Image (cartoon, rainbow, N blue to C red; front, side):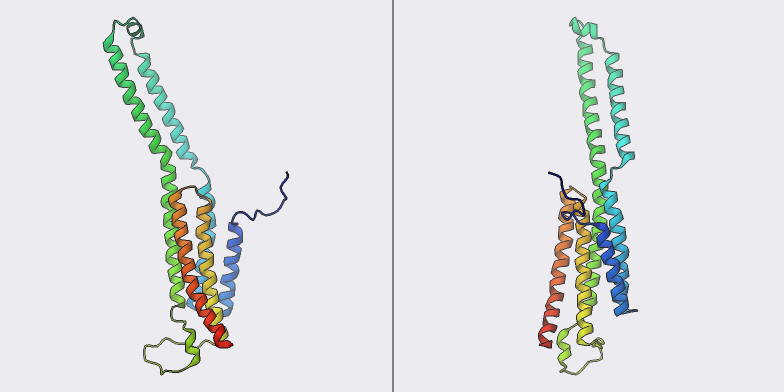
Length: 240
């Protein structure tokens, strides 16, 4: 059965996430120009562009490393051929040269073990390099999620009710109900996009460690976003 043409809705599109991040950064700048949240929006846009590029690179093989692996295999086969070439095969077959047989077995076993260890190291080196770079990128996303959470930390919707007197250390609260709602919604959207950026890494990797780390970032963004939506719900209740 022929599949219908068009976008694939089974996987995340890095380009669409970047477009959404650019649009969100513009919206924040237009609504709250010159604020820290606008700066965080610009940072999210740059992070989205970097993540899209890194995720594509993650899916591509390291040609140089795989070439080195092929050369290593050829070199190992060459050494094995050289060892076998100098063996007294006639004496071994006629069972008159037991020393040659012992030396052959010892050299062969050592060479096979050495080649196996080298192959295993080179085969897993690409995966370990990708894992290290991806974990560093996921750590950046995790840190950014906490930065966004700090921006909404002092945005208390109950202050709109008025009440107690201010103290010298009280934060400035000059936003209207509409502006505060928009501010919190932008924070929630930024956290949601941060979670989707981490999902891009998980979608391009089969490494269970990378997938688990990406899931942790997504869960963090979801938990932080849930607190923000609770504040937005309180604002809606106050309006009613």
